[in-house]
Image 1 (cartoon, rainbow, N blue to C red):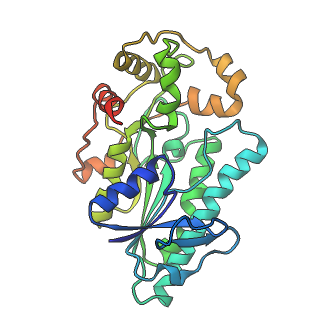
Image 2 (tube, rainbow, N blue to C red):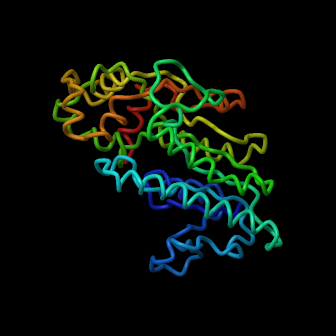
Image 3 (cartoon, rainbow, N blue to C red):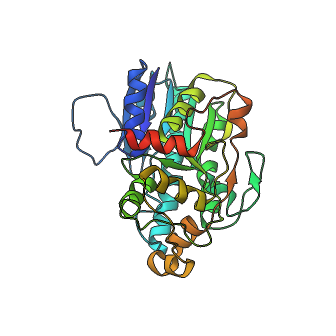
Amino acid sequence: MRIALSGSSGLLGSALSVCLTNHGHTVIPIVRASEVPASKAPQISMHPARGIVPSQLEGIDAVIHLAGAGIADQRWSAARKREILESRVRGTRFVAEAMATAQHECSRPPRLLLSASAVGYYGATSRVVDETSGAGLGFLADVVQQWEDASRSARDAGIRVVHLRFGVILAKQGGALGAMLRPFRLGLGGPLGNGQQGFPWVSRDDAMEVIRFCLNDASIEGAVNVVAPAHTTQREFARSLGKALRRPAFLPMPAWVVGLLFGEMGRTLLLEGAFVAPSVLTQHGFQFKDASLSDALRTILKQA
């Protein structure tokens, strides 16, 4: 396939680009119009105000849209929360509208949109939820609902749209796990708050395999929870990471300290959680390579 990919320099996108290329696909990055091309390789330009010129999508089979401002990069001021929301809604709308218009203007338009989303859709809950469950409450739940709704023009144009509701993507090179490694290696790791909150996770390798799976299975459409099948609490995750690193992991960080250090962002991302089931993937026969947290962490920590 010829695949257009936004967010190609991110934790998932950078590895995904290599993965797809190794499987024989041609990956064409979607870049901001203001960026100076690093090479003469084909690129698709997205203008910050006008979006994508639909003719750039001629001959593209699928679009994978992963771009968006980092959720946990900094404390959530009003301005940062607005940026988190607008970067996702605006970017997704630009991609979806360009794909919809391309159905009429291109002789060979893209027919599939795989758009990043998040399990934050379900809000904080102690019950098990899956793709049939309704939206939760809170900032992230509101963001995800608007994020997914921004692809409506593509769906209305008859394009197959898949919303990839990612859990915490585990990779040694960055993200949540990358940030945790140093304190845990120093023996300073442990549960956050009471540690009973759900911690929906997926290895980066499995996240990439889910994307490949959705590319190839035309019957998959709508929301897809990209999480490992095992239900894990934050305390269990801390214990497993400590064991994988052969370090103690019993020093708790009280909820009030999390709030003091990280504000609303910390309270939402670190103290709240959900137990999320990948029902759609299970029903379609997807096989997780990293279904066990302890095995997944050992594999990830051995990677270069």
